[in-house]
Image (cartoon, rainbow over all chains, first blue to last red; front, side, top):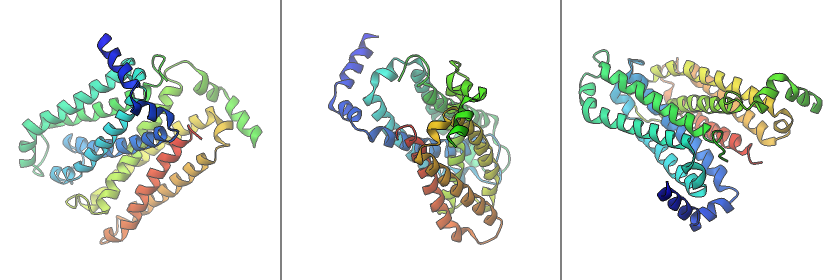
Length: 165
Length: 152
């Protein structure tokens, strides 16, 4: 993929990339933030997913949704710190298939959430607290839960697959 | 003590965890440690945020249902953490930041236990706010200490 290589070389030569690589503290700082962000994201999103799947019925779905801004904050932290990693070592990520799997499952999680918000959320919230969630909502919850844990799995494993890092 | 840690590191299980080229050895153990982290810290974050006043429509009493999930996550991390320690016992036992991490986790678990006990009592939610804030700080600190083990 020559276009990708051009981009990788360009990114690696930027002053930002230089700065990230010369700093001794930016990498561990961003890694720590990345772990905090994923905890918020997986913890809160996982709660909503399990609720959609039919667990924790004592809590209304609307109530769980009130936590979502914190999950989005966790996601924002991880996009920003992830961009720092990518800027620092673009060749390690761009040439690692596991990183592309991670991006794929990230996209799946996003499409799944968008599907839920646009087609199911209104119906689910209207029936909130009156009993079981529809089968489609259960499936959305399961797909979300599996996608996020797969994103996490790929993220941690990409250091060990191929000749990365 | 150094002899003890060298002996641990030489055990077949420790050697396998450290040296096996299998994807199921070190990489999977480390990944499980991250999965457990997400569960433990994620569940605590949900409970702590609720106690601090976020999402007030979530009934306080319902938070109790989360603690078994947190303990399962902790079980994953205790087991995977033990293997990671065994694999590099001589190095890790000499790292001050490792003991900082263990201390932060121990206090955080005690705080979680106190919170889960006090959730049984009615009208305690407001008094649990300082503990919830402390819990968030302790887990954030444990994450930083854990990360720094790879650098210091």
